[in-house]
Length: 143
Image (cartoon, rainbow, N blue to C red; front, side):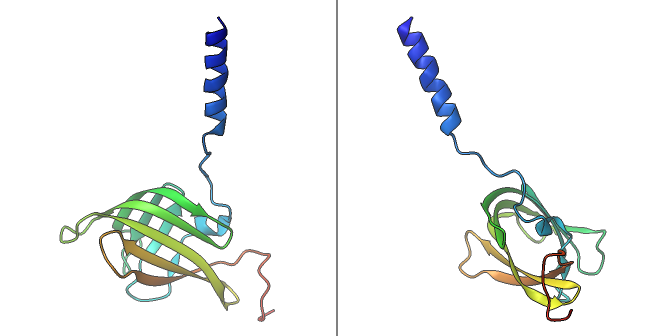
């Protein structure tokens, strides 16, 4: 009987010590649609478990989707580890680290976010820039 109780206590203790993964972004600004600042960037939509990019010319046409795991979740940046699927038959899916970092207030209505996309089998990352509506708490030199 003592072994059963001791085993139960050990099991419950192990369950409570298991790390809890974030299921929401700490900063809600990352839930906004990311509007591209460049002509070749895509409209991008994020959740803690997914990424979706729309083509630059038609934000209703999907260019890429990804199933992700949130590996970094801070107020000023997030990082997702994603299995990427491109909707262009010429591009192959890959595993990639995709980071988004808050930069600065680009204009009164544009908070600059920088994306760093690094495929796990490539040496150099690609960088894209986006704009989101700044939250009320962002102070600006434009006020």
